[in-house]
Structures are given as C-alpha cells and as structure tokens.
Length: 217
Image 1: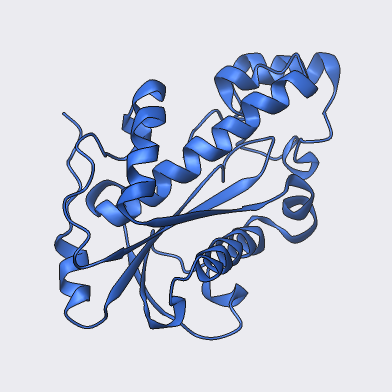
Image 2: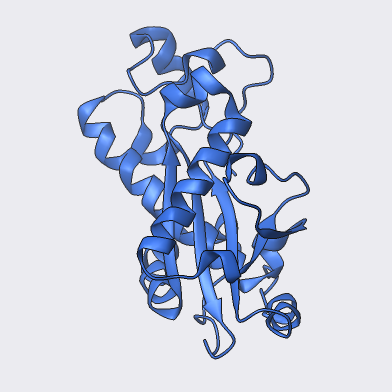
C-alpha cells in the first residue's frame, strides 16, 4: 500500500507560523509541455486532508481527477507554469523557479499572506529562492510529496492541471500520444517525434539530451 501523508511536519511549523505552503513540481522530466509547480496554503484549523490523498504518482488518473477538487476546497491552491520555450532558453532550474514564483503570486492575489508563511518544498535543492524578489522561509524535505499532506496536495493539483493541458493540446498537435504519456518520453512518443518531428510544444534542447527517459515525476 502507498504511504499515507500526514500533517506531522506542518503541525510543527504551525507552532511558529500561522500558515504553511506546501510546494512541488511536476513535468520536470517531460519532453514536451510546461514544467508546473503547485502550491497549497494551509492554516492550522484546516482539518483532515481528503481521504484518498497520496503521492500523486501512486494514484490512478481517475482518483487524481476526483481528489483534486477536494484538495482545492481544503486549502488555497495555485499552479504556476513555465513554458517549453522558457525551459529551452533558461534551463530547467530557472524555469522551475519561475513557475514557483508564479504559483506564489497567484496565492498572493487570492489573499494568502505569502511572506508570513513557511514554505515546505519537496526535494533537497532549493530551486525556488533564486526566483523570489524577497526572502521567504523555505524548508526542504526529501519525499515530502509522499509524507507531507500539504505537499501531496500541491503536487496533485499541479499534476491534474498540467495533465489536463497536455490532453487538450493533443487535439492541437495530434500524433504524439499526449493523452496517455502527458509529454513524457515513452517509446511511442519518441517514435512519433522521429516520424513527425518536434511540435511547437517540445523542449527542443531536450530531444537529443543523453538519458532522456519515460520517467514521470
């Protein structure tokens, strides 16, 4: 059974700050489409997380689609994106920061006091701080998308939104199988690129990069 996320880390942070923002990225390893960052702001009185919330990679697509609206009503969420052109021009690390900053700006516009929050960021590398114009308190935690409910929720809403865009774009750029692979480098996707050439949504700097693989993040 997949591990269940908890609010253990968030409860510790709530003793020091009124607000925790969980953040995670999706689409980092894709060959097409944006990289997207989800942000989920939670206060100490938010209550229990949605019943089926897990690390989004362990959830089926129908379960993700059904659970994402529950996450959005549980806290205040936003998703920021950086385009494939920005990834090509700036590199993935800078693009991640741009997408993260856009997510935080969207939270601010929704009334969230972002500067007062502690940001719980999945992973061990802080790609967010260089993109921000003012310092924020950021806590890095490996496997936070699995263990911390705020980060699990952030990743889920980002994945559902990004997947939805890739499915819509499959109608605009048919033949690459984005309905199923969501832009990741599956064998069928790679074969379609070889046959059709890259689309306007492909990360051209990635297409010949060594180690490109159908790994979903």
